[in-house]
Amino acid sequence: MEKKSRMPSIDLHPTRCHLCGGEVIFTSNARIYQGKEYGSGRCYLCLQCGAHVGTHIPRPDEALGLLANAPMRKGKVQCHELFDRLWKGKDQSRKLRSKLYAWLSRQMGIPLADCHFGYFDLQQLHKAYSILQSISDYDAKLVDGKLVFEPNNQLKATA
Ligand SMILES: [Zn+2]
Image 1 (cartoon, rainbow, N blue to C red):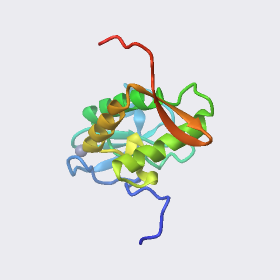
Image 2 (cartoon, rainbow, N blue to C red):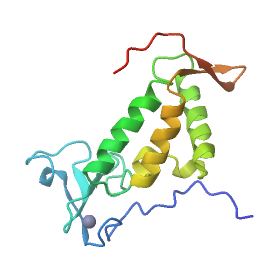
Image 3 (cartoon, helix red, strand yellow):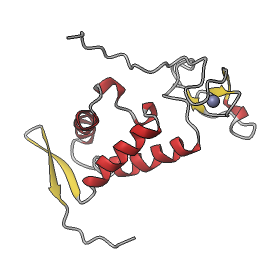
């Protein structure tokens, strides 16, 4: 067995685009936000296809995840909507959230350190979405520190 690592397996200082193989530069994010800088003010940007990813405010040269194109950004938002409703505003929300990430990493068959929506490629985003969709009639909660899913009794409007 390999020793467990907390380091993610994706490159957080990308120089090549994982989507198109193009050259990636570290630059001002004003280039993607109509001339204004946000957050860390920096991003990684693929010069060929325009995929990009933001960086951490305290560590501005470290990418938040994979370079993303529009379908990946949309997938990430959709996954977060399904995931965040499971823990946001709940009792012990931080602990519940970390239990949910651990659960999702097991469902996905990936290490916990890689289990962030911003680290997923489009295929993994689709997989995460269908896993989360499959429990959309359930609420998550902690019982004696263990993650439990319970059917939610709210009547759902069909969208
Ligand atoms: Zn690219």
